[in-house]
Length: 64
Image 1 (cartoon, rainbow, N blue to C red):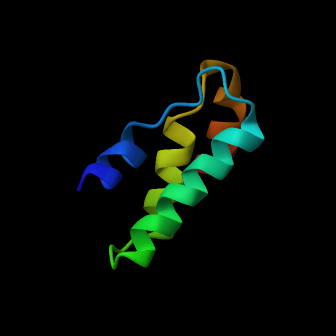
Image 2: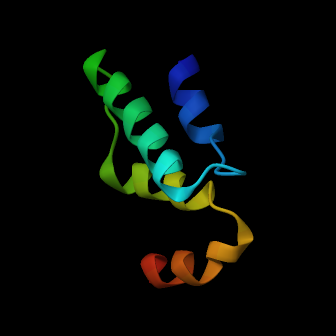
């Protein structure tokens, strides 16, 4: 449960986009390895929600 909460609360902040996406992927992989279901749509939502405001255009184009 703590890992799922960590995934849902993850924010990009000062990480570069590669580090952020790797961290999201690693958390999702760990959750999957312990039997927790990580839906692709949820993973996309978590990833997009953790991005900073300067990624709003990207967020909007993906969400459409």
